[in-house]
Each structure stands twice: as C-alpha cells, then as structure tokens.
Image (cartoon, rainbow over all chains, first blue to last red; front, top):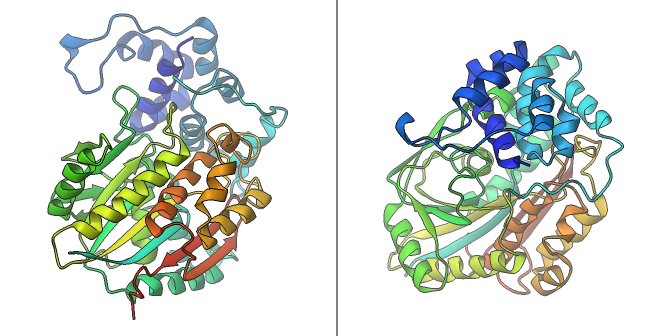
Length: 120
Length: 287
C-alpha cells in the first residue's frame, strides 16, 4: 500500500493548472505518465537525485485512472486532497452551487465510521 | 514588555470572501447577516488597537508536505506572500502580501525552543487561508506585521490535544516576556465539527451540531479541563473527519487561560460548518 504516493499524485496534480486539465481529460494517460516521470521526483531536488522505489499498487493505479474517488477514500488517500482536486475537475459540470460536492457525499453515503486510516 | 491586548479565536471559512463581495443574483441569502456578524467581530480587534498580530493556523498541504512535515512551525521572514492557486480557483481568494514582525518570530523561536517546544521555522513562507481568512475578516486593511505559527492538524501522526493547549500557554508567556513596547493580538483559527471529502460533507449544518454546542461552551467558558477530559485524537474522528482542526481552538484556549471566560462570543449556523467567533481581553485591553 502506498498512501503516500496516492497523496503525492493528488497533491502535485492539484497545484498545477495544466495537470488538473490533463488529468480531467485523460486520466489513464496522465497516471501512466505521472508514475513513470514524476512519482520518484523528490519535490525540492533536481532530477539527478530521484528516489528509486515508489510505485502504485494495481488497485491504486486503477482508482486514479478511473477518477474513482470513492475508491480513493477506501484506500486511505487524504480526503482533503481528493476533494480539492476533484472539485477543480468536476464542479464546473454541475449547474447548482455545491452540486458536485453533494454528489460526492452521496456516492460515499454508505461509508461508516471508522473511516479508513489516512496515516502515511 | 509587550502587552497581549486581545486573544481571538475564530473559524476560518474560505467562502466568506466570495460571499461578502458578491452582488445581485450571485449574493447568497446568508451573506448579509454573515457580514454583519464579521464586522461586529472585527470591531473587537480594532478596539484593542494592536501593533502586531501573532497568527495561528494550519497549512492545508500548500507549502508543507509529507516529505518534510513539521508539527509546529514559526514563520521568520520580513514578508509573507499569501494564498495559493488552488485557493484562488476554489474560493476566489485574492493574493496578499503581509509584513512580518521578524524580531518577535526570532524571540518566539529561541524562547520556545528553550521552553521545550522543538519549533520548526521557515524563512520563506507562503501563507494560506487559515491565516488570510482572519486577515480578511478581522483586519482587511492588512496593515499590521504578523508572526505566523503553523500547527499540524492535518497529516497524522498529530500532536495530542494537550500539546496544543500547552503551546498556547507558552505562546502567551513568550509574547508577554518579549522585550518590546508593542501591543500584540494573538489570533488563531480552526474548526468546529467539519467533514471534508467524506459522506457528511456540505450538509445543511455542520456534521455534528451537538459537538459544536459543547465546543462553544468549552471555549466561551475557558473550560480547558473539561475539554481535555473529553477530546482525544481518536474522539475527534466522530464529529467529522476534519474536526482535528478544533485543536487550534484548544491552542487558543491555552493562550486565553484556564477558566477565562471569553469577553465576546458569537456563532453563525451555516451550511457545511458552524462559524464561531471569540475574543478575550486579557488585561481589560481595548478600553
């Protein structure tokens, strides 16, 4: 399990306007590119000092590649990161204020306490 | 020595700026009353006539990240740029630049380390809405130098609630021992019950109104002992998955003092979360 890497994906995409659009339009391709090129970047280091060991589990890769935010919740991705990025991608598709946020809650409505552990 | 002229604890609702500045059909029905309450709250700071603001908040995965996560961090810089692209995108927050009170930052760091808090520091800190929301609500002219203090309420493992209270007590002592004639307000923001990214988010009220009622009682009466007897890292999951931000209110209770009743209390029951505003005048300040 690599909750840290899930969070790293959500964090690095959310803070980059181009990546937000790229992930919205091509989730599978973006996840493949990101895992290949970005997953092992240490964020404040140059490219010669990359990590060597970070990779998604198959179910994590699949959840990201299908925009499956309930699955990300179940995997213990940080819910603030998931929510923020998915609002950025999909709020625009809803006419009513908070329409996407309420749909998001509805799709998680069968989740009960205790929620999955988000500690990394 | 410096004087603590006001202690202020508040929620930080990132939608306030957009709600309060929107007009016509875009203006939500709750905006006018919200503005009225915030302006009354603002007056409690204005009347204290502060020179410097110590601002306690929590970075929301903006500059602080899981590869290098401090528990408590003090900004020590002459300037702080503020607000981030994703806060502009989601909340419409404006970019700001705040002046820093660097000598007080240095004093809090040195004396805080000696008092048993291994404080991290940052010489280049871009602050987020946990600190800019109270600037927008309480000091929109943004004319006072600040000392930002960040706490980790976000990325477990977290410090326990008692540690937040103890840090609050220590910050109060440090500010009062700072060799300066400045008038200092200590302002901190957190949450009552809150759910983000979970099934209870964005309901018609906060996710746990009963927790909110009890929290307001603890804060307004300064009941630190009662609060600590019931609030744990585990218990805070029950009222909502982002309710650990309540620990910043507990920190501010430590700043205000045991048993110290708030001089000003107001709340506003909004969708999604309850707003809560508290002011203490430690020495009859503001008069």
